[in-house]
Image (cartoon, rainbow, N blue to C red; front, side, top):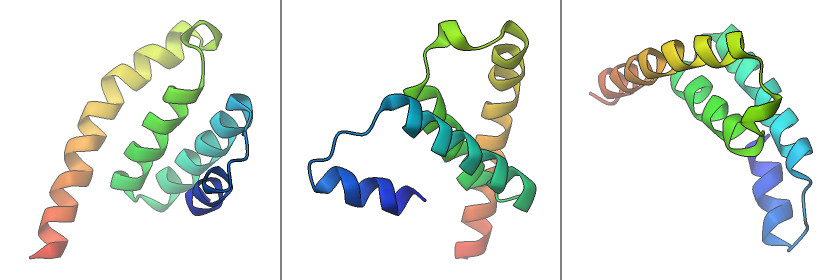
Length: 84
């Protein structure tokens, strides 16, 4: 999914931030279901980069604030062990 967005951006196409947010949100759900924590972390951060924090519910912000640092460390740890 991210490759399609990068390809369109390289052509100079203007992508609506709402569309980018939706793509990254769905991507994060996909990687969460696959238990690919490094990609889940990356997709979640990209989602947060494209969505206004005013549009997020307080509970969602709280869960992401607690969950993402743990997932980021887990994803990095898994990536380091796979590279060895």
